View 1 (cartoon, rainbow, N blue to C red):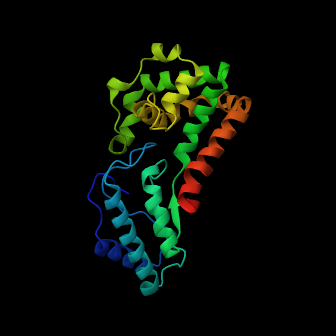
View 2: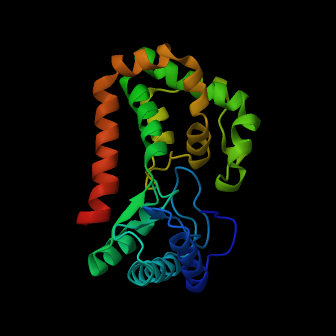
View 3: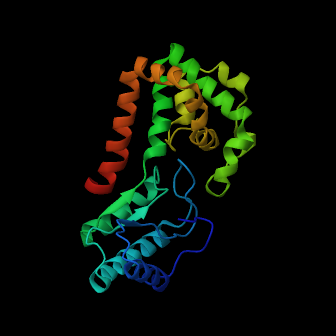
Length: 238
């Protein structure tokens, strides 16, 4: 899905699906373009009503292509950069309920952010590691952001310094990072930076994994609640 281009028309999507069928590719998901922006780890930036129209059009095209071109019956529409796009979950749920279609929504990136929230929420050494991850990501911001330039919008003026964050309490760090737009301290620029800063934790290796284990109760609670309460329920239960 290229969020920077205009969306594919239904005809263009149908042509793509016909080509997939001609090549006998056993496709399981298809990720078309949608209008507006799907930035990493934050909400959809665009007209929700327009997204709903495009989403329903794409579902209809996929259903037609499955019947016409003998594509796999379980071919699903993919909202590939869809993690934490909470404002479009209600339109998606309505469409799935009406059509019985399946969907693929990516959530891997949001799990990583919930791990960092769990570390910060645990306080002590967990909080210090969360601060270290942010500080190192800030130091490496150009390298970390370059591969994701088309799917992030970070206002660098809104990023606190390493020194400022070093003095934060657990509550301050969590409030800045957690995706809660009703919280006045939520900082989407900080959230996007940490989202693309996973390499910082990867380079920590066992030190990071050991800290996850030490903070397991908070990490597990945040990951589970986020996936079930904020993704699965809005998408499939309402």
